[in-house]
Image (cartoon, rainbow over all chains, first blue to last red; front, side, top):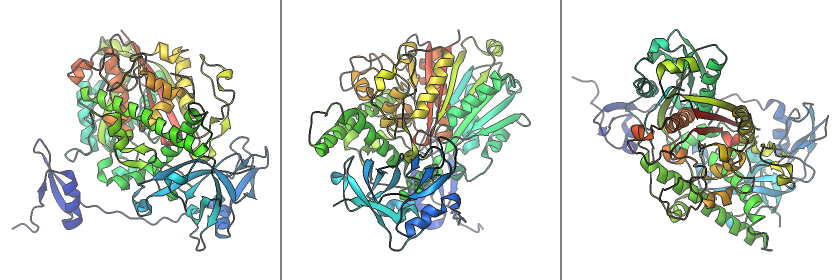
Length: 175
Length: 443
């Protein structure tokens, strides 16, 4: 006598996925009649992630500061900090960026990867700052798709309960 | 290149794991050349993108094993979306360096093993996980950021330069850009109706594309490729050996690669690296690449075309299979590869130049046939099992140059008559790495 009854057979792959959530196993029968056993196989992991040379940026966000970096060799200012300059290879120094900038480009996302579906729709923008040669990618809040335009002035806002993530800062339209 | 093989790309192939998919593509390739047997293959180059999808590290070893290739030499390649293109060039280098006479390049991806939005997460892990990923983990969002700026540079500032209201002008420009991107989507889906290997052949109208679900403004579902399961292989060898295997070999006459910053935010605002048929005057007021163009694609094209002795790619190539993961990136790539000047991609699309001649599209294509792009249907319609995609392009290009499209597709419609020379183009995450290879009829 079998210890476990045979899994249910499905001809639609989507139904297989639903069944895995219920019983943990299913059989998919394809158009040629070939049957394949499919099982649920979860996987989770907790990383010990160091921000390493980017540490001051993330500590800065928690203090309500946007930290960029400036090359000690050529003076190039990076809005997304880099430990070393990509032009001349010299180390950079930390430097506080202005809290205001302009939208260089933008989009409104109706989807995202699994962990961010709960946030949809959300806006992304690349921000340009006076005096910086590169950009910063961030969420753009307090506005909807129809409100946003390239060149729009924006202001940084900081999470009062910082999580040491890039999402601790976001931008809103300047009033 | 003496032979190639492709599995039909599909949303899922539950009855085949990655080893069996590669084996089927390999058997198909070898079945074309009776005297090309396993003992004639000196080694392999195996490409797949994501260990997350396989959840089986050293999956390339298992492919090597399943094909019975042990103990021959093998190297695994991974380079984001350009993984297949890199695998192809790695095989080329193994032969060109004199290390091997005959090499198998094999690539695969099994993306159906997770749900779509988890799959998007795995793909987005190929963006900076400190600064970019936590904002949404969404590649379509990154490409939308790029095309919004591309439209700003090349439609807002030209076609709508006369409109004073900035916001109104930008809206009109995006509407215009969306319409033109849809022409690309219609083209690739329609071409694919004649390609039995394609995952999503469809007869669409511009309206259908625009009305399909909005994914990341302004990119709609029909302007974006899907996830796929699939495998593809190519066999490369020396010119000497090729004569023993086939009377219809295809030469690889140029290879190029290029790179750019992982983060869009770090892309420079500098000068355009010119192709021979361009002049610095063409781009006097252009900050390049910014986030609107792919400097890696330009660099790869420059290297490959220089090696192949090509000075004007539109005139000297008969077709291109390029990496249209998004309809937007197909238009951006026309410019990178010098099919038109930077800024002319939208007009070039509307002219019909990248469309097939004598093919019925639901809108006028007066210059059709000038340089057909993605005659196979491209990634948008064929699917994009990442590690196989660049090799799929190589196989389709190989069949075009052999003149064997009818034999392989069971339909002669997509055969470009007299095709002598074509290029393939494989592109990784937001343009952070690109390969271009130029193939030429060798008989």
